[in-house]
Image (cartoon, rainbow, N blue to C red):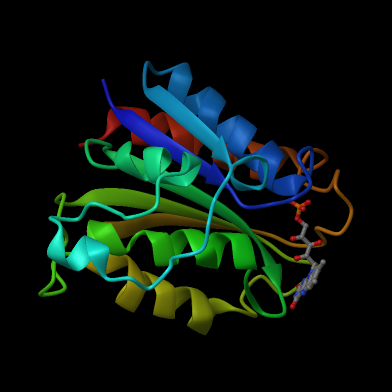
Length: 188
Ligand SMILES: Cc1cc2nc3c(=O)[nH]c(=O)nc-3n(C[C@H](O)[C@H](O)[C@H](O)COP(=O)(O)O)c2cc1C
């Protein structure tokens, strides 16, 4: 059984990120994956303190909050799904904060501490060009994620996302999301 950990970085609990994650979760669960889901805006999630404790303490973070526990779930996960709204052409602050807190997932030599895992990224934006942020998304996939052992296997972009119901009204997008969940549950 595949273990999948999902993070929603949107402050709008019934917005587009949530809708897309609902469909990924449904596709995964209906194909017998174990899914854990976290909503970052509902959690106590401190920013990284920059103490370097995880560098000298076998990856143990000095902070103990709800995000610490969620990150511990990643150790034996097969895949993670991270959904972020785009704020000023980047992931929003909550998701950036989480990636900073992923520091313990990286060894001191920059190699991943807990082995290879898949990551599916979900990005929502108001702008209607789906490729507008391609170079930024490629940068995250090519430089940041490998340090954590994460290989981006799928990326979803939802446009016109100021309307919280855009994803709900897009059957093709929802089918894509369900299929992503199904594949995460099934594939090696
Ligand atoms: C502070 C702020 C900055 C934003 N910057 C951008 C942007 O640079 N490009 C864009 O296409 N949309 C931008 N948006 C629109 C959001 O991406 C959009 O509202 C969000 O993806 C909706 O996702 P949700 O329904 O899951 O909350 C911005 C929204 C806010 C609140």
